[in-house]
Image (tube, rainbow, N blue to C red; front, side):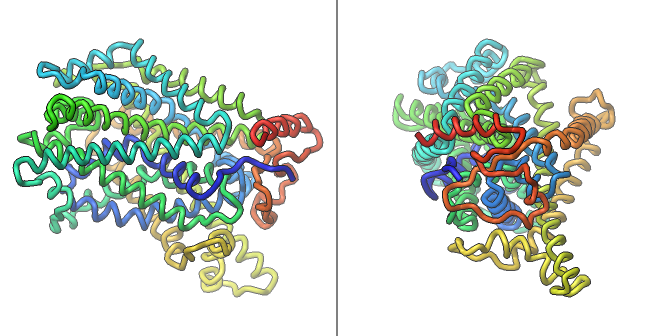
Length: 569
């Protein structure tokens, strides 16, 4: 077996995973959710669901990717069986579809860094609404910054895991430093009147609000998205794990680091807004674009330190936001690229094709349906429709992961029942089947932390219940508060979501037979080969190690050998 691409060590994996998890939602959505849900009150359910939803799913993703050594399509093909490779394609598609418009949003952050560092946002007569409208209604500018983002991302992933590792390390270290700089200036502003009311709001719990279901649902939704749990990102990066890498400690480290960054960003934003705004809660709950690109420049312009303070605060915050957006884009593009490479395509060509597709399919979100709301603020309706359609589609990826775990446990238990080595009935399944995945793929002897029965409870019981609650609340709220919600022509209705989901799911189920007819090349580092034959799709003769030759597909092995020589040479 020949060498495969891998991270140099644990820190590379952790920084790459943190980079995937930390995005614009941590920095602009989180403060809005805190403001709308009682400040510190929101932190209680948000932290609770970190351990109930996010970390258990991240542990599962790491364990699956480390064993399969393939991207999402191959992982579901191996873990769920040949008939379910389409689930991995769904996961890859949803992530890539979000990347189409997320590249546009990332371009906004770069533009505002340029405006911030040039001083264009700190003048006394600057109208932030005019600046925002002028930019969003200038297609050439929006496309230019979208293109820059795609170009930067392609450069970061061009040569594989080690390049991804280095880029994420430097960007994350820089992001931490920039956020701490912003936090220092924000707390200085908040303390100027002797109250620190923004910081106090951030950590003050209203116990009465903890009895409101909406606060808990919002905490669950924020935790579900902000950690990228169940979205396939960690499956992808686990492909590059070293053979003895600890999946459990890495999952906890990633989750806690992600939430720490959210708290730092939230404290920085809320402290600054409370320091200068007479109605801070109205400002902070005014919508993600409003708070980030309209309100915050006005707030940061009043930072202490003469002319240099506002400049540092403005540029530092938007540069940190840009880094968060770019690292998330890196993981999004790499998730797609990894699936191409797994199926025998040249890496550089896969990177180029994916980058071109993300740029071209992102153009409508950049330029179409740019409208003005009732307050005269521009908003990209086409982009928002795309987010409306694909955003919640990610939740199904987590459900597919849970399904694969449930299926493995059931198959192993039934096999031992048939062999007479395990008891039949519910008690037998609870004793062997439920813990099968944890015993075989998580507690493998490489762990610094051993996972107990609590993980089984989260995956088998808590996750499906919370999935139903989250999706049910989302659809119920939409039906109750959206006019013509069942009209397929309504871009904000329910029918358009179900229509697109249904078409994509049926199409991918049809394509499944073509997916499994092609060899799958596993990226196995030296000494990390382990038996996968007991898995539902592990005995497939077309599932081989990188560099192996499959009869009838010799040309694919040759391409992989050339790619491998470029990476390792």
